[in-house]
Image (cartoon, rainbow, N blue to C red):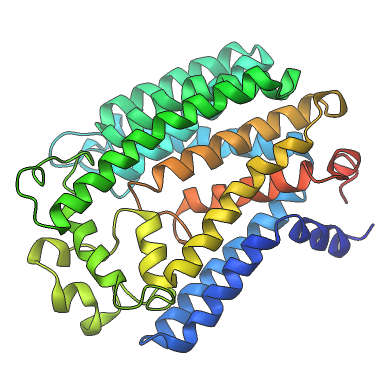
Length: 362
């Protein structure tokens, strides 16, 4: 099997994500900032191509790359705090390491800690466990509340994924996963309630902020903008930071105008690619979990277990984190790169023939 044939086979395992990219390309037609949109979608497609090259590597090597890259960056973060605190700490003394802000540092610490802890647990490796604890400690000092809460939520969910991959996703494990997933639903109801209260002017409840950092004012503005083109959107990458024509500069308050994203990936997809784009990206994110129906633990070796666990951890964390940050379809966002990589990994390995070719990669 040639590498080209293998890559084509990977692409065929999740056609919905390809339709999402195609829709984003098509949206350039009705964009008011066509050059900017074309430049941004090109970057997104280049990142997608990079993830395809990585996923063609053997499973154990992919896990090794994830551990090495996250480990090196976290060590650099610690060195920054020790030797250049003026750069590694923000003006409030919160740790951010080499990242632009504490929220970016927070999610990277969270996914690094999850990967190291669960790989340490899987391999019974003391040093991986120590590293995971260290990365979790850095997370605490970032004071990134969203990432800390998501990290704590992911710990029991990760153990369920791990058990399911080792023993199979029987009815009990599947029900537990659904139960833990159901915990997220009330949270998003609270977020929607907050958004709706502010939008409809219910002053009794509009002061409630379940987003932790005042994102609701941004969401209210974006929500109103969505109704101007609810099905098609403004075009990929054509809503924020497009110069003097940016809707945020023209129509938003001074507070909202300083931002270049909605701090909610789903809202950003909805405003730029419309309801059609949102349905496509949600379907693409759900498809890998649907593929778990094909999973048979007896046909997968240890390396396959590990790479699937890493992919499930990264994808699930990214899906949840996208409710608070604009991650989806963002070429410059490392978490989106990891989410896309995870989509390819899960969809490929859990395809009908994935088990038999997982170790026959070119």
